[in-house]
Image (tube, helix red, strand yellow):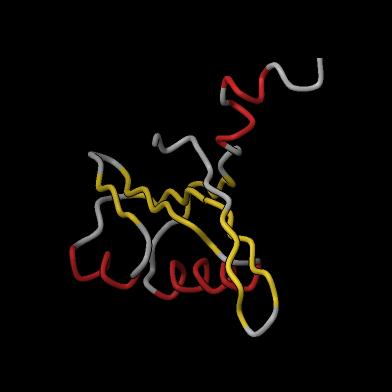
Length: 98
C-alpha cells in the first residue's frame, strides 16, 4: 500500500464504532530514533530533508494530541494531510454508479 492511500477501518469499543483515517504528517529535518519512538503506532520515514509520519489516527482529539507532541518535541511542522481513500481509487469502485 502506498503512502497516498488511506485505510478506513472500524473497531468496536464499549459499544461504539470507531473509524480511523490515515494521515501523513511531515516535519522538517531528520528525527533521531529516540524522537521517532515518541510516535509509537505510526510509521516513521526519515528522508534527506524531512521526516514523514504516517498511519491511522482514530479521531480529531488523537490528531490534535499528535500535533501537540510534534510541538512539544520542538519539531517544525511542514504539512498535515488526510490521505485519500484507497477504495475510491480502486478499479472495483471506478465503474460504480454508471
